[in-house]
Amino acid sequence: MPPALTRSDSLQDIEFTLRRQFNKESFRPFQREIITAALAGNDVFVQAATSFGKSLCFQLPAVIDRGITIVISPLLSLMMNQVDALREAKVDARTLNSNTALPERDYIHQDLATGHPLTRLLYVTPELCSGETFRKRLKLVHKQKELARIVVDEAHCISEWGHDFRKDFKRLSWFRDTFPDVPIMCLTATANDQVRNDVLTTLGLNRTPARLKIFTTTAHRPNLHLEVRFTSDEANDRYDDFVTWLQGVYDRRREPDRKAELDAAGERVDGIPGIIYTISRDECESLAAALRHDGIGARPFHAKLTKEAKEETLARWIANEPGYSIIVATTAFGMGIDKDNVRFVVHWRMPKSFEGYYQEAGRAGRDGNASYCFLYYSREDRDRVSSMIIRDAPRDGSGNKQARLESLNRLAAYCEDTSGCRHATICKYFGETQVPVCDYACDWHKDAQELKRRWKRGLASEEWISTQREEGNFDDYAYWSE
Ligand SMILES: Nc1ncnc2c1ncn2[C@@H]1O[C@H](COP(=O)(O)OP(=O)(O)OP(=O)(O)O)[C@@H](O)[C@H]1O
Image 1 (spheres, rainbow, N blue to C red):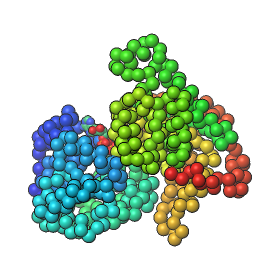
Image 2: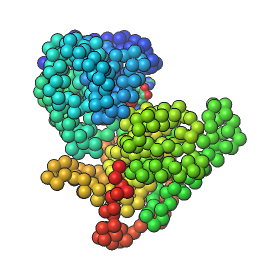
Image 3: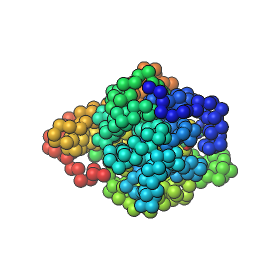
């Protein structure tokens, strides 16, 4: 079927737009190929590591093509960030979601109702796409040949095998059914083979294989230094361990030569941006307070804070202000946060999935410089998370309990593995066959013997854990609810 719109595939056009509208000198590897495929009217599936620059792959075609691009995204904060950045670049981008003010909502509806919208990119939630009014408006726009492309960001949310499954993403099959000629682009950082197939089937993209272009790049992030730190309920030593590590980093930055460099660059000794992921609001608050008490600039960030408090914390952290070096956050923080100099990401507790872990760790080092990611792992936490997944699974057997448990088990195995490179295990998990080069960027490569010793020493024994489990000691969820 021919594409619905007259498209431009002029390379000169895309170079010009890259510089003029997006203020970037050149494309990163693969961006040009992806953009060219999209502009030719293909369906496109992009799987690329965190910080690869996926957004540009649909934003640039949206600016060049005639008509409107609809971007479906799971998170409000993610939409707002992208819309703000686009508007700063003088692109007419908007978002329609539960937070959109009435006048803006009216404007967008009127704009769509003309059939020839001026809006270039409209960011919406998957829930909105199921609404009759919105669907009617899109049909009108399509009839006028002004529906340029449908983009599904964070596309792994479509799959029940994915770590962030969202029911409403499944209903996005409506787009291919209703507008078979409108190209679809989907993007994700974290999908294994099963998730990818699920995404393509649900969106109906494998019904037009000749039109589908798949781009997958390695998940490997060589600048991330990956490490697992073993602990147990009894040892309860995360705090001291972390503060000792951080003070060590500060001390090295105080050495005369380094200090002179920092002074010249206008940087502070303690100005090292980082994120600590915790699992509960209470822990998020208490940990940030404890760090502040010890003179470390840390602020909490979780869903229950006011919008103003969150915005202020985020803005001051992004601006590297004193007292705002570390964000202590629950897992909702991260997607769409584009701060390039995050130097460390710490998982205070075991995350709920392999994909979630790697996506969150991937917030570090987006500028390509060395950054540290460590995860505090205890067998007690492993069992708590597992109990939580079982508890939260719908009773009717629907949902993805097995997939979630499988992902957790793979993460636990990754943590307890002392026999190989962390980067290699991650790439294998995401279905890659090539072993990545790791330049002493994981705890195994740095000192395999020491890793084994730490593993032996650090964890509670499985026997003890199993007794505790039988006594129901890992079912105290109160502390763990987000
Ligand atoms: N060609 C380019 N030249 C310079 N900077 C770029 C280029 N493309 C993208 N970037 C920048 O790279 C950063 C990361 O891009 P983006 O937010 O799209 O990443 P992403 O692939 O969506 O990652 P994630 O999955 O982690 O959200 C942004 O600051 C973006 O402006």
